Length: 118
Image (tube, rainbow, N blue to C red; front, side, top):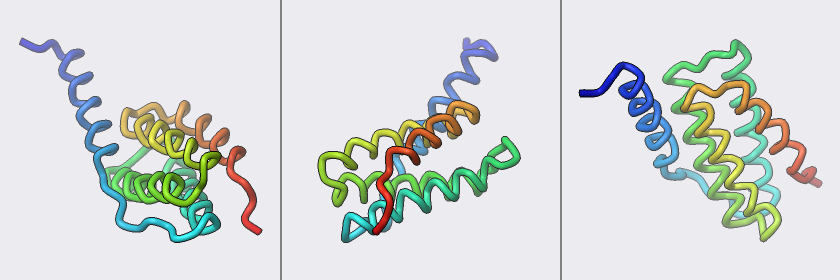
């Protein structure tokens, strides 16, 4: 029999797994478009977490934009930006797991790692 604490951990892990299982719907066709996709993800996360809470609708939007950004960075970012796809997945997992402060810290670092779009 699961304790309340074990049940909560299991439920959180399931939410994280579901968030990371979302498949991309759009993959960028250029490096600049991949960076733009990452910036859209950042903007969406910041807007959703402005109140330090996350709704199901916000989480669904973030997971989809995150899947798109990670796939775009992997496909078009070259070796440097492809590594940043892991950062997107880490941030998405933190949000799904309720680690809002950690996600915002990771988001700032991720944003600083992105190159400017010419």
